[in-house]
Length: 406
Image 1: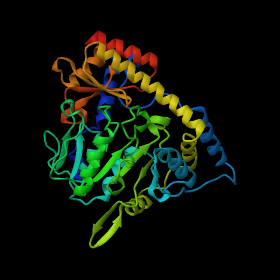
Image 2: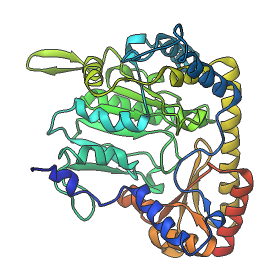
Image 3: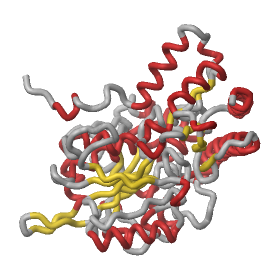
Image 4: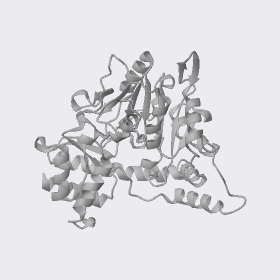
């Protein structure tokens, strides 16, 4: 048997799997209910009543001859595509066609799978710190070369630090693809309209594809931060946008997302001009049977007037928690970022402590779980991510415990 050595040579555990293992080991010593988890970005509030009813009604209809549905359309049902276009893009003044929207089981899947559209030797750039999936998915197929002590030999990393305002400095030797997440996971910072416009102009000039992860767009409160990259002139020629129902509508366990690939986004190969949307459709037809009818009904319900009001309440709850974390830790003297347009707070570890040492200290002394910044890349060392995805009570208790520990 010949195996994929690129996969075998990767880190032995995914970042959040490593965190889960450490917490599980500690839980053998400490009752699990004592641990407050602000680590993994998983929501904790239940589905809203309107969304749950739509989900339930659709599931029950599948038990009737007239309501049963088999395989869904590969791109998604028209009712969900129309709801996305009408509610997520039209209010922004952005025109999107049905044939440009592709429904899937998650933004994690889409941002991980989009690399299949690229050649085996395509050069990839990511911001640092970065959501690990962007790197891992390219490493698995060998596109990044050999793993080194600091990363991968062919990966272009663009540090996003306090010194550059967490906005990447763009390289002169442009890559084939650049992954961006705004509002950012893990730093919680967001690109302004001017900053994103600069990146789009650079990408157009150099023929670079932008893979834009907009999973946290519902948390944007700053009017100068775009909710979609397609608000930026020229973005339709260089960008795809991946969006999710997970972090706003609570679909982490339900699984539904969508990616927008504009018609203008093309590439030339062997003298042919090929639309990336056509490649993605062809890939999806072979790789997936789509998202179930009840899930798509629930997603559509989250976008109508009643659903949006309920979802806004969920988002407001998590943003309030982020404010509790941000204000509490700043008052305790810690340097913190994010937490305004995002459910994540990115803090500088005290006294130069390594991020994994800080993780272990908080786990054992405060019984609080966060995410070590080093798990997101070299520029994340010395930082730590806390999420707002918990109850208000637990969030306040966690902040109190952290302050008493540092």
